Image (cartoon, rainbow, N blue to C red; front, side):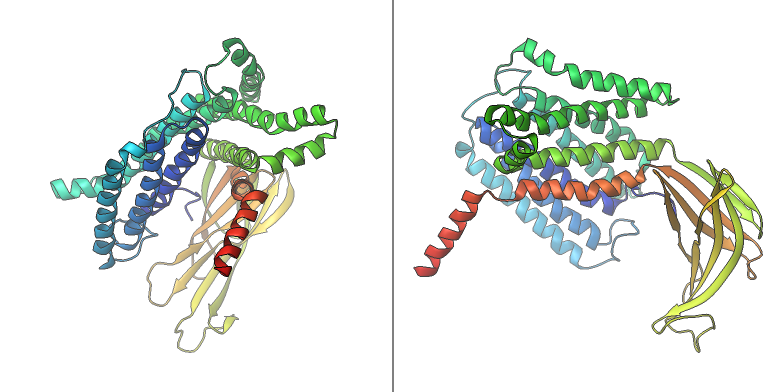
Length: 442
């Protein structure tokens, strides 16, 4: 019932770390295939992603981290730690032993080139991965060295991760604009005209609408910049194809997607990431919080919404379903007390909400079940803090959070982009089928 979706919890971080390393690898492999460089770097990233996956499993299953998501203390932790050590030593040994096979066949010819942008983007991913990893394991390190734990919380992660995240969004817009190899400086500057204008338009729109937080305005501006580049890169091949082959834009777009699934799918993923970044910035900056203690008929405001308490309800839930009467013995049952609240805006009722508290027989403290109501682009999030025995008074905490729904919309878009990128080309599928047939007849 705390009203958030990410708390920089150790187990949450454990799931983020391999994702960051793997994303860096995916970008690095594009440069390796195109320019025959960064071979050792690319292999190191994919090995790092695997090692971080094992480390994340250790962090979740060992019970050594204080997290609501982790398992209790378990003897399986040392097993994962030993496996992690063996794989780490083996990976380093393979990299050193095969170093002569991983030498680059080319080099980065210019600073303003796409391969330079990919390399800088990779460095951002690596630094962000190390930053999150250090903040996650630092309490364990201090406890081992000094005998006491030092808490590393949300302020550290936000202070370190936000600038790196903004640089990542900036590079998301810069990379596709730059050419491979030596650039034509004037052509590059012309390519930045429309994205630069998008940055200025979004920034001015934020200022005109009354936004004053510099970091949030910069985030929205960079999202506009990256969005303009991404949309142009998605549409430009189709437009060129339509002009060259004298076909409709829709047919040309379909052909360009089929012809280069990985490129198009990658830009779809970029669209999703841009939406997530904008949503995180808005939800963190413009979240409104309010608390109230109410009797039936009383109300309080959270932003533009009025929350009115009507009555309390009570029922029991268990293996046999729900009932209003206490079950005999009460074993494996819970008592659910909810508060019925109406939501209105400008005097008009827009919905009802019923956050609850769950009372279990073996626990002294109840467990809350919040209620979330999406109204337009805002989530209204209510938590029941307390309730008297007769329901005559309840304590309620409310959050009004903008654009969280964008995150949920972006997830299937991200998944779709990933699927498009990974979908094999027809020739690859035919080669796989042919190889399978040859194996079957041999």
